[in-house]
Length: 498
View 1 (spheres, rainbow, N blue to C red):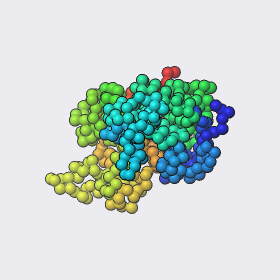
View 2 (view 1 turned 120 degrees about the horizontal axis):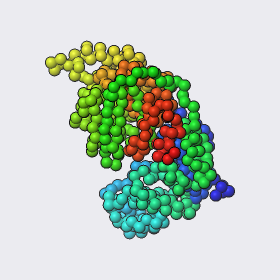
View 3 (view 1 turned 60 degrees about the horizontal axis):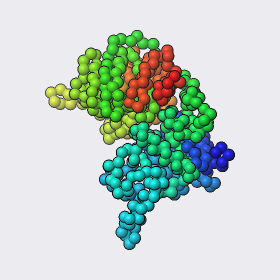
View 4 (view 1 turned 60 degrees about the vertical axis):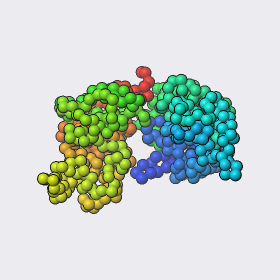
């Protein structure tokens, strides 16, 4: 295989988003008929690189050579024209349509304006047989298992005459038997000369299905290895082998009594029973890869998502009702990962966003005391050094770092005893990150209990007193600060035995 000429070569790929250099001189080489695993932590640049390849993003610099010619896809449709097809983790089928109708959706064969159902079913059957899938083309997709739907997605990709197929976490929702069927189809594709770029965090899969593996870190290509000539330890070292950022420093805080107690919190197919506790002044970091259940845990604690069982107590008192209003009343605040969609009301002003969950404190006999509301908001703006033109400025006009501070100000104004941070520094610049770190330090100085979800190893190792590691909805272990290392965290996150 290694003697063959590359089918795909990506070199010098750069992509910049506001405040983030997502890709920097990234490279990737794919050989005909191979399964090439793309590996890296959350935010390493894997999906961004694939979106550049498949036309969803346009690179700022770099070159793509596919089957001997230079290409620069401007859209997914153009990429599909070259034979480059990406299957996303979320299945993209319409349950109410048949298998054949999904395979040919938008490209139905017609004659005189009439859809040729027989031709569509016949061609669908050929595509399904090509990947050894025995599903009847007339079957409604709603009647299929997740594994069968995954195979239908592959058949649809072949309908585009795919010359290269990208699979993003294809086994995330599959049972063991379905994974076996998927791997059989992948091997058959490769035997026909169609290579597969396979994105996965599951180490056993990498060694079962992969031929070669490329590791990315911080938007760069770190190295490529032949799967047969590497091991788990080397891949983990490549994934995490970077220095811890000097700007992240841990304050020395005397911890108090347990403030937050989570006991057996569970939700079917999302969270296994999770139990943990956080003391006053403590930062509990939460690590895990995409799909590990970190965000789902925070939302379950806050009451934003329903749970099947378990309890949450603050100061020894159980939060009843399992809803955000009850959590806020108990002194729990959630800073969501997606601040624009879930954390802020972009159409409202700075003052309105800050006082939103604690507006009742400025209401006297049913009348809003606007002066008191503005005074409380101004106090938080001054304390957090939020850079605004005025309290009446639309929050949508602020920078990412200042928007994040507004979300934090909201919960400080509500006098929260527990703060759940989900990726608090994502998408903000270095200076704003340092300010957020200082603010978290000031909070724990005041005895606030902090749960900190982060994909940045430097944040977790630099700030947390303990680090809880999630894997596929399960709490795999809690590491004391003295025993935490990038390698040990990654072993738990990947569910790899020491």
